[in-house]
Amino acid sequence: MRVYNFSAGPAVLPEEVLKEAAEEMLDYKGTGMSVMEMSHRSKAFQQIIDDAEADLRELMNIPDNYKVLFLQGGASQQFAAIPLNLMKNGVADYIVTGQWAKKAYQEAQKFGKANKIASSEDKTFSYIPDCSDLPISEDADYVYICENNTIYGTKFKELPNTKGKTLVADVSSCFLSEPVDVSKYGVIYGGVQKNVGPAGVVIVIIREDLIPEEAMDNVPTMLQYKTQADAGSLYNTPPCYGIYICGKVFKWIKKMGGLEAMKEHNEKKAKILYDFLDSSELFKGTVEAKDRSLMNVPFVTGDADLDAKFVAEAKAAGFENLKGHRTVGGMRASIYNAMPIEGVEKLVEFMKKFEEENK
Ligand code: PMP
Image (cartoon, rainbow, N blue to C red; front, side, top):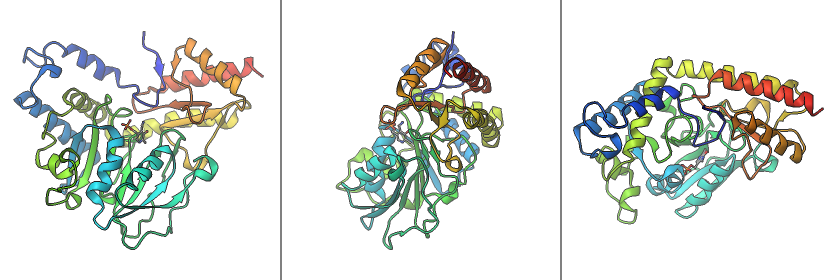
């Protein structure tokens, strides 16, 4: 029996994708082997990665002057790769809206001058600061955001005004959840283990002119975008099985109607939960309504013991991973693309019952 899995990541994947992968486990399309066992230099794998890239390009409408890289090291490795590759003047501006943006900001300080130009830490990252007129540095190589803040449940509804500087965005927890205009960004990247696939793959979509033309002597070969772009993500052995599953998820999203349809589906789900939180006398959402994420919905009762009781009873009823991030407590329901609407409806039913019983 499958549970309703509200994990922030690794997270729920489409059942159809898992079943297909199971069917192909022992013999992938007549090759007589699993994708896990296959050379990354084989024809069959080249087709898998080519198809994955083509489907992602179609889904996100990625312009031709952007490269798509399938890499390892998670989103956290990109915290270093981005300044290492993009800091030509040695300066970058960071908007710090949560722990992940903060980690990226701290990592960048190792490689150049990273400026914190805005932050929402004063109110436990419960909002997105006004980014319409920030003190962007004259010589900034880029402006960095974490577009959806997984832990706190906030999302940039409007991109910051970068005053012409390159925008770099970590979209780990909102990847493929709604349409996006890639041309507004220099780099979009994310770990796939939330909306897209299994942990172990990070996707980097980067405008070609941002990739250093020459190899850099002082940067590890594996961390240079040039290395990865020149080799079509096959400089070394890539995370083959993960890329294969990502490819299946791309096909599933296409079948579901693409990113417009995903957005509609995600808005519907989030509304059910937020409407309930707004009407409940026990539970309440923790972030400013205008900045609410469609993907991660944190909430509290206001009483840590009652929160723990709720998480335990929910688990017993088949609703898994509702405990909030260890740094903030309370609860968090992550309702990524693959969470069906019934999952959210049933969770709200359960919350109503809990509220009745714990008045
Ligand atoms: N960015 C965001 C928005 C995240 O939610 C996470 C982790 N879940 C990370 C970065 C770090 O990702 P990874 O574990 O792949 O390094």
